[in-house]
Structure formats: C-alpha cells, structure tokens
Image (cartoon, rainbow, N blue to C red; front, side, top):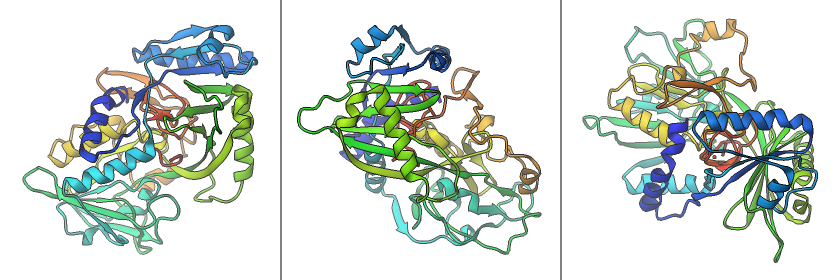
Length: 418
C-alpha cells in the first residue's frame, strides 16, 4: 500500500494530462489528535504506523497543535503532525478516469451482465465492488477457463446498479479484455460444487459535506481525530467544501435506516474537534458501501485462466488505484506473480470452505504487506471513507497510515464515501 501511495504524484499528473481535469492532488499535512487521555493510545499507534512506513511525524502538545490548526478546540489534548500527507478529490478522480479511458479507446456499455461466460472477450476482470460476491465460478478442470456465471438478482445499491462494461486491447498480444463493473447471478448454481466465489460484503458509511459561508474560516490541515475512542476526519477541499466522515456499520445495502443517528454522531464528534463546524452549512449527506473482505484486504489476482479479480478494497480504494491498475495490467499480460500472495482472491478457499470458516474480519485489523518493503504492517485504522492517497484509509487523503478511504481525500476512492 505504501508503494501505491508513493506512486500517486506521477499517477495524478498522468491522469490530469489524459483527462484534462484537475483531480485536486495536493500536499496537505494531517493532524492526528484526541480530546481525552484515553485517545492517546490510538494517536501513538497511528504515529508508529507512520514511522514504520518511513513517514515523518512530529509529536505536538495541545498548544502546538492549535498553532498548526487554529480552529482546533481547546479540549484537544495534543497529537501528532504528518507533514508529508497529500490529498485528492475522489469524485473528480472518478470522472477523470472515465474521460481518460474513453480517450484511450475504451468502450463503455451500460448493460446488465447476467452471464460472464457470454461475454465476447478473452479475459474478464471483475471489479464490481460490493457486487463482486454475486459472481461465481462453476466446476471445471484446474487451469481451464470453465464457465463463469453470475447468479441471482442484481447488484443492489452502490454505484454499480447499471453495470458498465469496458472493452479495450490489453496490449498482451491484442488480447481483448472486458472489465465488468456490475452484474447479477443465477440461482441454479450448486454452491457445493462452485470453484470460486468472492467473499465481499458491504460495509455502510455515511459522509457529510459542508460549506463555509462568506468569510468563515476553514481548517487548513486535514484533521483526523479520536473523540472518546471514535475516529473522525475533517478534510477541506480547495473548492471550500469541508468533508466529515465517516460512519461504519453493516446493514447490507440499507441506505435508509439509522442515517439520522450517523449524521448526529459525525457532527457532534467533528464539532468537538473543530467547533467552527457548527456554523457551516450542511450541504450533503451521502451513504455508500465499502467492499469488505474477511480479512479486510483486497482481492486482486487470477481466479481462473479467463477471469481476474480486482475488488474488495474496503477503505483503501483510492489509495490503491495505481497499484491495482498496474497489477491488473500485469496479470492480463500473463504475469501471474505480479500481486502479493496476501491479496490472492482464492486465499479463503472454495465457497464451501468459506461457509465452514467463521468470518474473521468484520472490522478487524489485518496485517498488510507494504509493497516494496518486504515487511508487514498492521493495516491502518478504520475511520474514513473519503479519499486520501495515504497508505490506505478511507478519508480523502493520500498519506501514510490513516483511518481506514476515499485517500481523506486521501486516495481511497472509496465506495462508501464518495
């Protein structure tokens, strides 16, 4: 993940050149703070994760923290500053990726995919987010394509209701590849006999977007904090928008119930850190779904000779865009060892074995191999689905270890908080 975050500066420049859009990539320091003595342990843990990935962090007293960010509450007890963090706007990144792909000759089809085996392509990439679990592999000889089907209903909720199919030459001997972004699955597949199924579940997240009015001051840093143990992030965009996130719960694809409580909790905690937020205009409440896996690590790799998975990024979707793109391109070019074993989409076994094993990961922290280091580190803590390019988080930034998407504007484009 650290390698993917480090790739973002060049990736952002290339994306802007290819799309003509400014994706909002910029250097913006992150303050990690707490309001109680009990929050200190989490702050120290985040500082250690930054150091482990060779990021600089500066311990700050409460007074020093307020000097860096004057809008901080006097209740803040201190924290750490990560001066090397970056930020990006995940919504613009999404638009830029679509434009760049179209200019490169990718064909998009807004159609429902009922049966992947019917797609006229040598290779199929499943990048359906929370809908990926609906695709299954029927019995076949090991190493043979077999039949790839989608069973039952359709992708409910999320941004993949219609499904977009992009076809383009992969560069590997003119092999044609289809990227499936949504679909349905049939009811008639025998679960006992299936060769593979992607164990992806929706983790709901609510994100708030606010605006300062007139000459109201706004935070000049990204604030990521803990309020009585609860993580929160506050990101200011260049447009003047202030993003607050993010809640996290598991209610399937339910966008309706519990939203008022989530908004209340997010605002209350954000105001405890930055009281000025109470004076802003609440512009938008968005609810989305992060694609989680049993160990909360992504599923990237080959499922069979015809099918590649690139899904389950949970809170780190934006941060992992460069690495995921490079990995999928390598897999389509025949380099099956291009992805760390920790991300192997078949690591949980067959569908039958998955059902026999208790779910390991609902919001647990997993160890994550950081590409290029040969070391392992605990995954960044949970907390923001906004997008940062950091080492994986769901806030909207691009930084080192942050709360678990969008990169805090970090680069985690994330599903749940865009």
